[in-house]
Image (cartoon, rainbow, N blue to C red; front, top):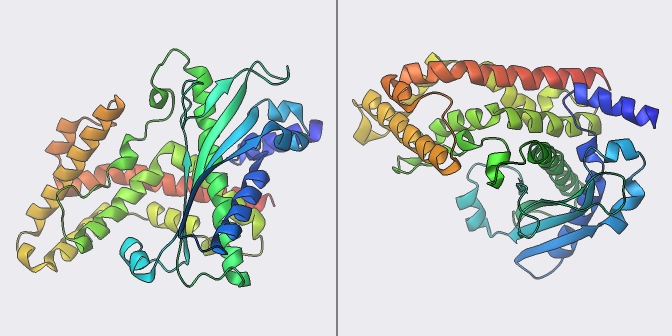
Length: 354
């Protein structure tokens, strides 16, 4: 048991929770098996919930101390797979070169009688004071050219599924830690991390796609800069580094994004935004005015999300509005730079400890 606990300590220092990954192989295996059945069928979509009960989990509990940190007795795995036509794929994922688009969901902890939530329940055995049922999901959209018989495509599938679970289980673990800490808070989202900044990427005023696509880089950087996303991305890149030790860190998309974030420059981004806006003929000559309008749209979206989640903004809305668009980017640059540095630093530590 001692060596398991020491390994857990080492991984926590690297930004990886060993407890959250105790059953990751089961989730991967169940998802991959279901996907292969789906891809070989005539079905165009599959939406089911797979229950993975304690009888299946029990053989994987080798260290009770480690298990007690995340005492799962059941996973409710929501699966959502779709085969898209080429037209559907091009519309949904323009300029996306991969043959799969994989995503995940980590549910909040709610009342034990609620469906669609993770929950704290009575323990099966008196190892811990309670046990948990974890609700999480995986989605895969498939491009027509994907071939389950090609090694390259299968390897892509395995990496997509495994890395998604590494990421989402980190969120599940943090949801759990916060749920047992903030027991007096009723609303499930109130017991976990604030995600308001993560949902500012809505083009509610319908700016042209090319302009919005460029602005959305900034939205994506802010999303990654959330502390819970930094932690989840570190655990996700841990998968890639340990599974592909022969590769350089620069080969991994997470590291590439982190590098872009570390080098984000507010003036350069603003100048490029004005250039992109100027390429839309109706906006030519009014680039700065349009940039200010997009900023105001962003603020209104952020206001709505904060109100919805009953949380305070990171900086007051009045202060944000007093900034012009250039000052707005300058304010957020420090946060974006820090997040990129943090992910890269953890990635280098993981690589060095292989």
